[in-house]
Structure formats: C-alpha cells, structure tokens
Image 1 (cartoon, one colour):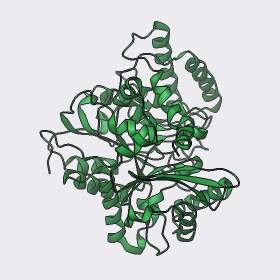
Image 2 (cartoon, helix red, strand yellow):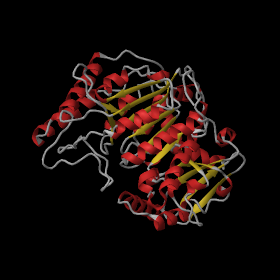
Image 3 (tube, helix red, strand yellow):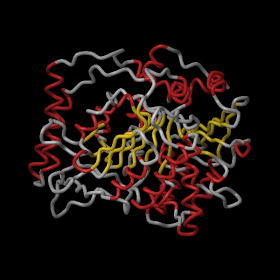
Image 4 (tube, one colour):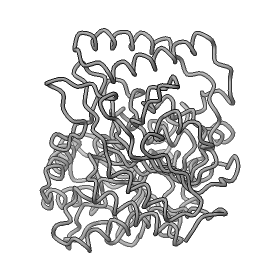
Length: 473
C-alpha cells in the first residue's frame, strides 16, 4: 500500500511540491530585462481592456505573447508552503495518516480505462477501491451534471448516479464525518457535497467535504511553519468600478458572466469580454466585514490592484475578494481576479497567477468570491492550474473558490453566514457546510444546487481561524 501511495504521489503531489522546491529561497533582485518585460505586459494588458477593434486586439495579443516569453519567474517571497517543501521531506503514507483527525478520510481518485480507482486513507486504515466505471463514463456524467446545474435544473438523477460511482463503493466513508477529496481529471470541477446518497440526502448533510491538490500537499499545508502571526483580521475587496474604461466591447462581445455556457471568460481572445459592474459585491464585503471589529475594506474607486498590493497582505488572517474572475485555458498564468486600474500606477487591474504567487501571504483563509476561480486547464496528474493553486503557493492555508458563475443575492447570504460561523469558533470546512445548509433549509425546493453548491474549500479545512486582537464574535 505504501508503494502504491508513493507512485501516485510522485505523479501528483510531488510534481507540485517539486515546482515549489525549484523556487528561489528568498527575494532576489529582478534583472532589468525582466522588470522591463513585467511593465510591458502590464501596459499591453491594460490596452487590451480598453481596445475594441479586433485587428488592434490581435496585434496586442501577439505583442503580449512575445513579452511573456521574456518575463521569467524571478525572486519571490518564501511562503509557508514553499518553506515546508524546501526544508523537509513530505514523508509517505504513514506520515499522512498521523496528520489526519480520527473523523477524517482522504479520497484520492485516479480515473482510467477500463476502470477507475479510489485510494482512501484514514488515520488507521488505507485501501484501494476499484470503481464501477471508467474515465469516459464518469467524466461524461460530470459534464452532464454541471450542465444541468448551470441551467438551473435539479441534477438529482445525475448527481445520484455519480454518488453511486464515486462515493458509495468506498467502504467506511459513511462512518467518517469529514471527507477530503483529491480529484483527478474533470472531478476537479465536481462539487461532491451536492451529490445525493442512496437515501436522497446531499452528501454535505452527513459530511464536511473539502479538497486538496494531493495527500502530500495537504500534509505540507497543515504542517508548514508560520512566518509570523497575523495581526489583522479581515481584508475585503469589492464593488470594483469597471465602467466603460475597463471594457473591451464591440457588437459581438458578451458579458463575462457565462452561466448559460459554463465557459470561463477570457479577455485574451480577439473579441474580448465586457466586465459589468457588480454593485452587490459592496454589500457582500460590508456584511462580511461586520463580523470583525478589526478590518480594512477596499470598495468602489479604492478597489484597485495597486491599492490591494499596497496593503500589509502578510498581516491578514482572512482575505476576501469579490470581483470578476477569469480563467485562460491556453495560458493559465494569465488567469486573474479583475480589480480596478489606477491611472497613477502602472498596474493594469489584472491580479494574475504569476503575481499572486509573489504576494507572500500568511492568511488562514483566502476567499475568492468571483466567477470561475476554481476552474482552469487540467494538467494530467499535476491537477488543475488556477487561481486556487496560486493562492496556496503564496502562503494561504485554505482557499474558498467558485466552480461557476456566482449568483449575487445567494452569494452575499452564504458569505455572511460563513464568516459568522467562523467567528463563532467553527472550523473552516464546517462553517462553509453550515452556511450552505442554511440556504437549503431557508429556501427549500427553490434552493437549487446552482445557488449554493459552486463554492468549495481547498486546503486546510479542519483548522479554526485564531482570533487575533480586534476580531469580533
């Protein structure tokens, strides 16, 4: 069993850990050519957000590609996860088991043909279960299920079929209150908590469901050293002013909210999306911030990339960003949270993966209350390249992200309750579960999966956020 785990982790968790081990061990002065390329990328991307002419956009995209070839990864701050991968060996199966709580089970999936597998681990047991379907059948069902949810259908039958294929065959899962999912392939896009068991109950009714890139990375996140204790409770960003200036629009452009198709918006194509303002994110951030006495809010004209980077980011326990999110299928490092652009700075407003990794966070939780922050191109056994991974690499212990376009009113309610549960002492995974169950209980049959199931927690879901001075209950 140890050998099987080692083989799986070499292909999955170790590849991610090795990427971190290859990073510089501390800040390195950027070469002038790299700094010039960084500024050129920012200038071109800012122009793309303003330009509507297809021919001009095509020219800018070509220049952007050339500038990105020069832009290399140079000195970045050493996060907790980076320190752990550099300084220590992650260990094997026994090490992972010792780090698990008695009520936890890790379900690590491998999709293959003609059969798929689930490697399930608890504190005292480890086994492999052969699943009753191959990759194609499972991924076809996942695609159907997501299409049903995004079109505001119940998805009940398909969700039950996926439960029977992925969860029900695993022995002992029903006795564990907490399931940690390590997905494979299109399972990265599947909200397991929304599946229904043989009694017609949602999985989240009986389990806290969280996610991890791999068993190795889960262990490293949970056991990575802190650089220093966070002293500020909450940083909230919302109500970004996109307006006409941050719109690449033409007769063929569409809203970046793509719930009807489920496709992430990509401003790096010739047409370019239009970013509409999200006024409800203002009340969302304010409501979330009211839970904490010590907070900083960047709202409206203050919600810019430059203002965000100017904050003492390493000092915040919680970072909450409510904005548009974009995922680039062809160029994953271009995935971004879309903030405001400040004419007085050289920032383009796109907080991208390559920048996020350099932030040097010390947060217990980063919440990305934006469209499609949990999606991205699938990279074989290495998992999914997206904003979540970037925030984990930057030092966040856990990330809440969305798997599809968020619904504004339900998101505001869910997030406010999520933080109240956290402030009342619940661990992060339980807090998210309870906030989702509240929506189900309150709206009954009208509580379609589309409204609550899209948010998932990746990383350390069992930890409670320590209450630093100034945090309110």
